[in-house]
Amino acid sequence: MRVLISTVAFPPSVGGMETAALDIASGLAERGHDVTVAATTPNSEPDRYPFKVVRNPDAKTMWDLTRNTDVLWQNHISLRMVWPALLQRRPVIFMHHIWLDTDPGSGTKYGGLKRQVCKLGTNAFVSSALRDAVRLDGPIIPNSYNGEIFRFRDDIRPDRDVVFLGRLTKVKGVDLLVEAIGLAAKNGTVITASIIGTGPEEAALKAQAETAGVADQIIFTGPLRGEALAQTLSRHRIAVVPSRWEEPFGIVALEVLASGCVAVVADSGALPEVIGPCGPVFRKDDATSLAAALEDLVKHPDKIANYRAHIPAHLEQYTRQAQMEASEALLESVARKAGILRQPGR
Image 1 (tube, rainbow, N blue to C red):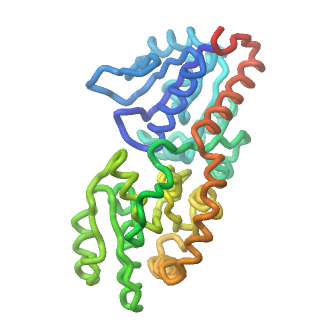
Image 2: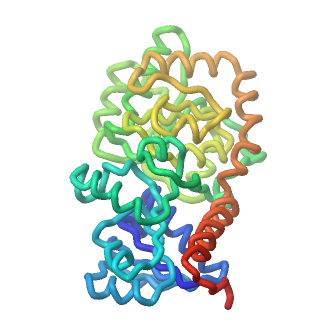
């Protein structure tokens, strides 16, 4: 089947939507589909993928790409890139990754219009929290994690308590973790932590740790990737995802779980859904609540073991294979309804 994937986020940019777009394109290409990606993300280097990538397509290019496809798969709705499919009556799948009223380029300006346009195609969502917020029907197809990199490692024994992975920004709530470690210290509980990542709040966070008297308990590793990241995660018993923003999914939660960490997440957005029975939640934007959750785990290793025991079964729904099987099933269902008879490999 000829599949055109349009996306507002794609490598070399880094993020959850970028990863999801690359995963679906690679997976469909591996399964025999003729895949083309139309991406607004620029790239100064030549693209080397097992599918065609068209960067920053203008209106004519988008029209021509659509004319030569069977189905348009939108990696989050883009009004700029969907109109040729609507005019040419091509079936469209809107794969929702973020809140509908949030657009990387236009904020909330076009949220209402996007909802109406989405009713003209088939919708799918990365989480039930996102589907409930968007208020449209469609299946849940969760994001996946890279099981080749993020996995339980019997050769690494955890020697630190808590890890954070992500951008060091206010919205990610890293300051809540530092504050919680300080509150725990006042209660006589020493919690060691590693903060992986970089960002505009890094200097402020280090100063906050000094002021709270816990600088010697916290290591700032800077950004890590690949095997170095995976091994560092495996050295920790607990991972914290303290986002102030209501995450529509949160791939980082899967990565830390897959690395053997019990996850402690804010009780908002899709985070509780993503971690399931593999960790406790705390009140969003509440360092006292986070401190209580961390102290409880650090003082009761049996609770960590109980949460950890749920991880393997829970992650089965988030494998690359599960994601691709669900995605291809949706694609073929839409194609059948549209009278498209091409099958993979034919």
